[in-house]
Length: 391
Image (cartoon, rainbow, N blue to C red; front, side, top):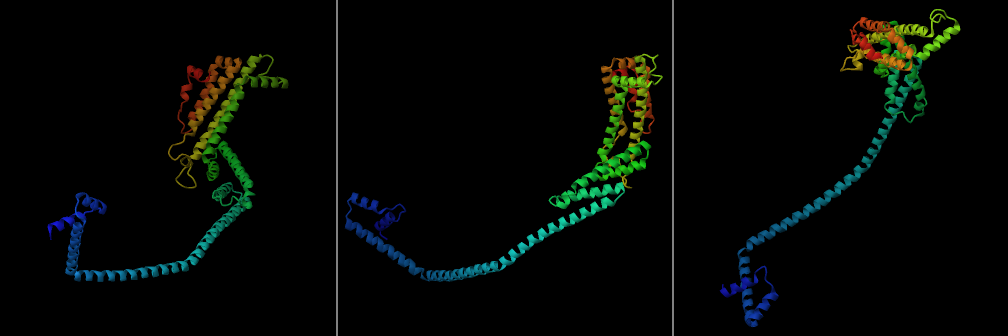
């Protein structure tokens, strides 16, 4: 190939070749147009000759590639037709399955609704059956168990919108109150009598109602209130004066005799009231001691005690709890009374050994109860400690 022709081919074969720029370049150089056209024609002939030679040399390979491409096109067409046919079949299958699917979906929803209805009817039937059993049951423990079953049914919230349920809610609440009040009465009676077995039956009722802890501590609170009211009336100057005035009207001899002055009569009555208060406190401690033995009993023949059910991790000391409450009550009421009545304060201070015996009697009674020990009673047995604690 001529070098000049190779130069022309290099000039026009570049990626940045531009016809206008190339024409302008020729004109600027002053090259003859006919001469340049001849050069380009020769170069074109040369390129065509090279292409022809290349085609002729690879004719068989090109024919083979063309045949392969034609075969691939045919296969691609077959695949396209098969894919279209498959999509049509899938669409047909979807259409055939859509109706059964919709029907099945509707049936599933219907079955779910029927299940909810059946559950509601079953709960309602069992609820009404429990109410009928409750009306015919006379055993208090069994009544509490039935009420626990009723609460379990009501906790499901399936009966909230039914008239048969809402119309009986008040009666169920009344049964709860009645059963709880009866259990409280039986528990208090059993503790007064020292009947541990009957106390266990009452706690079984409270446990079924879910009120075990509240019933035990509620008894302690009620007992503390009883002691508080008793000691409040015993050391209240206003109360003592009203009792003396009433006794004078009735003409009772002894403490209200005209020989005694009003102050002496009030002091005499004060110590009589404190003696009765000590009796009340000792009686209350006996009841709490009995309750302590009751909660130590096993629950329904199992190895679990009521105390464990109340507090699985910590041991309960009812007597110590009650002792602390009683000391606080005595301290609070005596300070209140002494601040309000100078006669009461003077009586307690002047006859301190007698008041010390009052405290010692309670302390000794507590110490004599089995399993109590000394607690903290000894700290009140000196004059300074009693003065600091109570006055």
